[in-house]
Length: 351
Image 1 (cartoon, one colour):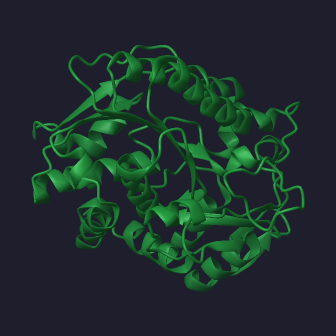
Image 2 (tube, rainbow, N blue to C red):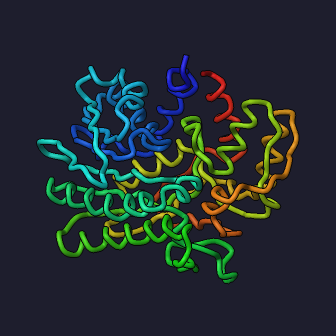
Image 3 (cartoon, rainbow, N blue to C red):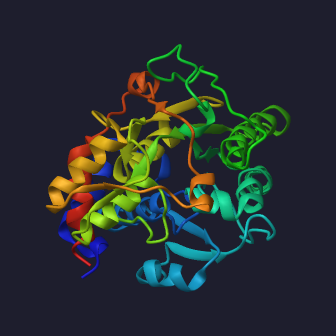
């Protein structure tokens, strides 16, 4: 059995339905999502398809992917339902070919981990800029009701030492003359493109800024620190820390991300950015490593990262998100970091 076939995961999908109030906005509608095979896209598709099956949502979905073989392995069970269709396209180069009316567009395609930033810097920048421009134009051409651009905590850059946490109005420092800057600067420009399409073409855009996310759908090639920690814990191996571990970050479990995104489809305000982070999920890398090592019965070791990997690492030492804005709209996260990690390990072991 795969994790997404388990009762625990199916219960999680039901909790997303209960917490995000997306039934009203997606009832009898059509939704496109890019980056469909990613961590967030996969669970979002599962949540909507679960609502189709259990609650008569009648929402038709198009999942845009580059690797059709991997996507069919993950989503093949949906293709005969009449509610789901895979679209193969590289949004940096290919047109998304869909006929008919589209109501909502969630743009989640992006390189999202350090090794890709270093090894594929051009693709990383293009996906967040050229790819975002093409996605926005598609949404405008199809008169979409709302476009969600999945932005990132990375847009805040380095904490200048003048804030304990980042509100949506904070403007941190990014050294643009570095290889690593391609990802956060690309996300910043993607947000600006959304503002341009709103002003010139009247498109409705909302900008969720997502903290470091994790969950059972993490891909094996993901090189983010927490992803590597989880992989080591699953293998009962020592947790490898490639720094002193003093970095203090906000994290969010993937089910909370999906819940928040669907909530923002219904309740977000046009043109606004919203920070997404889990409750009780601000923690240092060292604490994370020690917690996972304790769960696995192993220990934490220290290792100097190799040059290519290190080039992709964030230089931010404190990136904590203030979530008062989305909380004021009525959304709440369900999974503190320790509970989310335990759930991730449990679901991953189901494979």
